Image (cartoon, rainbow, N blue to C red; front, side, top):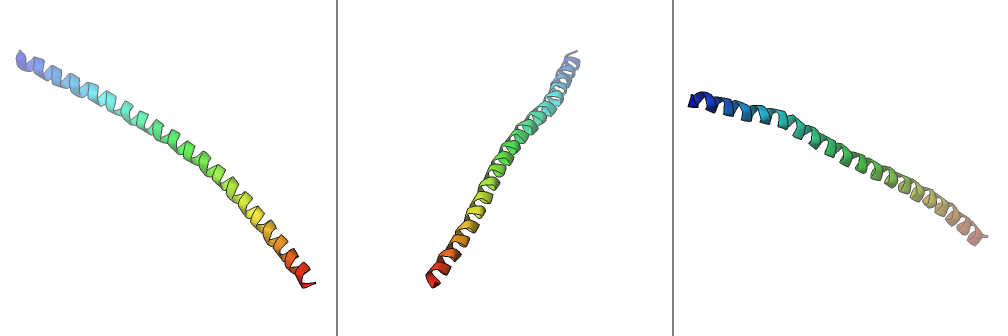
Length: 73
């Protein structure tokens, strides 16, 4: 009788663990996906800033050329 109770107890623990593990994995995946979305948003912001920098750099080069032309004349 004690062995049967012990087996039932062990089976119950294994069953509970087998249900909780997928839930833990799903929660971990959900947290990781949230983090990935945050990183993606930051990357988009950085890309926009980088494009602005390139635009201003191009403008500065054009202005520098104009200044050089004025100096030559």
